[in-house]
Image 1 (cartoon, rainbow, N blue to C red):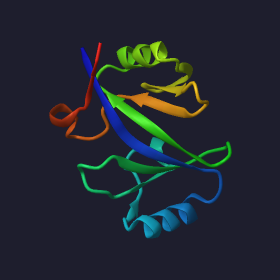
Image 2: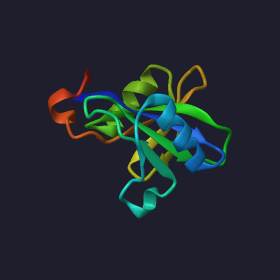
Image 3: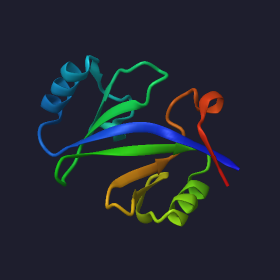
Length: 126
């Protein structure tokens, strides 16, 4: 048995990441900051309350869009559960999977991103 929940909302930005971060920070009322890992230089995060899903902006090469990240304590089990619902695997990136819903929407399934996952993880899957 594993658990999963909405972990992050990702705003994919095909243009100027700093300009996008400034806009979304002002629009949503949160400060934008960089992530500490040098591998994450193409991200900015909005500093939201710890009990809310994270909001990240990501510089991308494809058209701008928004996608969701589902965090889980068992990535492979959650991916299989979502495949049974009609989703399909698109690509593995580091420790997570990019997937596509039957509706064509892309989303990611990744390990826990927020520190309260152990206490507040959501849906229980099989």
